[in-house]
Length: 132
Image: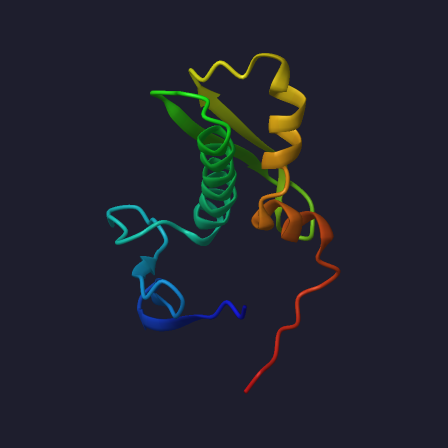
């Protein structure tokens, strides 16, 4: 399955994003003093993608194994590197839930580590950037 997004400059720091697969639209923006952004910045979206993907996988595991829960939340935290190249470091994702996983914790953790966003960050050998 191909995954495609289109990101188009609008004005200032605002980019409109349209996803082909889910037909969703949103904005990427950058906070400046005296300006309220229309959307999250790129780094926040990267962390959101990772935390969201892990959350989807956690929900899938719990649902598939009939493990009840009333609370499921993921949080992500990272540091902006102090040296070149500019990037996020020390990325941590936490899964918060009231599900009674019991002795299945290791299996649960292996399962959620297979989220494709996590695998992409770990195993992509490079990103091709082309000028058209």
